[in-house]
Length: 30
Image 1 (cartoon, one colour):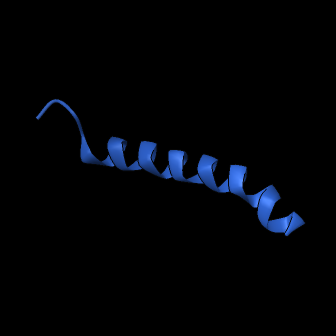
Image 2 (cartoon, rainbow, N blue to C red):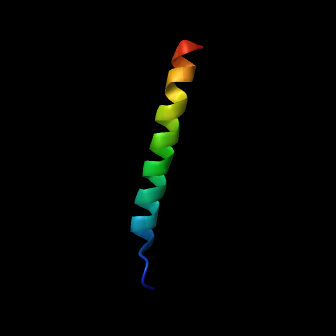
Image 3 (spheres, rainbow, N blue to C red):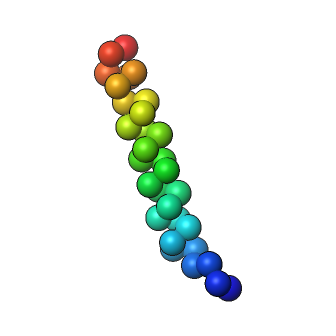
């Protein structure tokens, strides 16, 4: 296996954090 699962998981977590930060302002305003 060339791709490591840990690296993919870290990338997924980063993407999830970015999406949360984008939604955060809307939740705060609401």
